[in-house]
Length: 414
Ligand SMILES: Cc1cc2nc3c(=O)[nH]c(=O)nc-3n(C[C@H](O)[C@H](O)[C@H](O)COP(=O)(O)OP(=O)(O)OC[C@H]3O[C@@H](n4cnc5c(N)ncnc54)[C@H](O)[C@@H]3O)c2cc1C
Image (cartoon, rainbow, N blue to C red; front, top):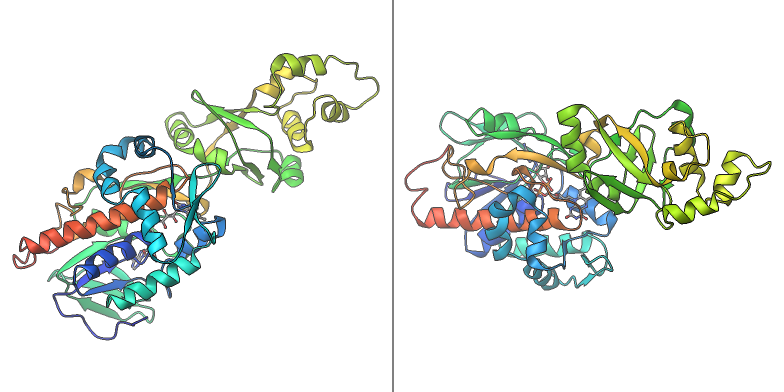
C-alpha cells in the first residue's frame, strides 16, 4: 500500500477515516479520476470492519427493500436515496467483484462465503492501490487552522497542515474506541457550529443490579431458550448474562427502545419468558404434578424443564414457589445502558439537518460526512455496514458534483 510522504497538492481530496464508509468514498472518488489521500490515526485501515468479521461479517440483509429501509427508523427518509443508489444487491455485486462470493443465511442475513473480513479487505485495498489511492496512517485529524487547512497530529506529536480540494469525514461513531473511532470529532464539529447529537450506545448491553452471588455464578452463561418483551415487541434470540447485566442479539434488538425508556424514566423493565416453547396452560399442568421431597431447583429443572440460569433468575427475583406465571413473564429491571466501549454501534452524531442533499455540511462548504458518524441507528443484521457503504458512496458522489460545480474554485472551505 502506498504510504503518504509529502503534502498533497491542493487538488487532492482528503478522506479522513479508513473504515468502510471512508474506503468506499475513496473508491468512488478515485474511480472518477480524482487524487485521494485517506487519513487515519490507526496503524492500519478498517480495524472495526476486521472485528466485525469475527462474527461472520454480516454485510447486509436480503429482505424486501422497503422492509429493509424501514430498519433505519426515523432516518429512513434521509438514507433512502443513498441506499437506493448503492443497494443491498449492489453491495453483494461489489463484494463478488472483489472475489468474495456472498450467501444468504437462514435468517436472511448476507455474509461473504468465507465468513471473514480479511480477504475482502485485502482485495479492496489492492483495488484502491490500483486506483492510486494513497494512505496516510497514524495521523490524527485535529481540526482546521486559521487558513482552513486540515490539521493532523502524527504519532510523535508533530503536526501537519494539509490543503485539500475537499474533505470527506468518515470518522465512525464511538463504540469500541480502541479500534479507532472514539467520537473525538464531536467537539471539533460542534466548535464550527455543526449540530451534533450526543453519541449514545446502540445495539448495546444493559446494567441489571444482580446480587453478588448471582453474578459470580452465572456471568458468562447464555440464557436459552428465552423470549424478551418490551414495549409491545417480543423476540426470541441470544441473551448472555454478564457480571453487570445482560447482552446478546435479542437484547441489542430491543436496545434503542430500552435506552430511550431509561433516559426518560430512569429504568426499563424487560419481561422474560423462560419457557417460550410451552404455553402457560401446559407449563401449569406440568408444574401441578407433586413435588414430593425434591428441592425447588430440582423440581423446576425436571418438571418445568428450566436451565440452572433460568432457575437462578427466578430466585434472583424472589420467586420461591413453582409459579408458571413468573416463569412465562419474569420482570427484569434494567437501570442503565452498558458502556459504549462494548456497544456494537452508536446512535447520535451529525444531524441530517446539517447536510445538504449531497451530504455536505452547510456550515462548512467542501466538507462532506458519511458513515456511522451521521445521526442514524439500525439494528444488527447487516444494516450498519450497508448504511456506511451507501452513505460513503453517496457523500463521494455529492463531493464530485460539488467540485464539478466549481465549489473548490470558489475557495469555500472551512
Ligand atoms: C464487534 C463488532 C461487530 C460488528 N459486526 C457488524 C456486522 O456484522 N454487520 C454490520 O453491519 N455492522 C457490524 N458492526 C458495525 C460496523 O462495523 C460499523 O457500523 C462500521 O464499521 C462503521 O463504519 P464507519 O466507516 O462509519 O466507521 P469506522 O469503521 O468506525 O471507521 C472510522 C475510522 O475513522 C478513524 N478515525 C476516527 N477519528 C479519527 C481522527 N480524529 N483522525 C483520524 N482518523 C480517525 C478510525 O480510526 C477508524 O478507522 C460491528 C461493530 C462491532 C464493534
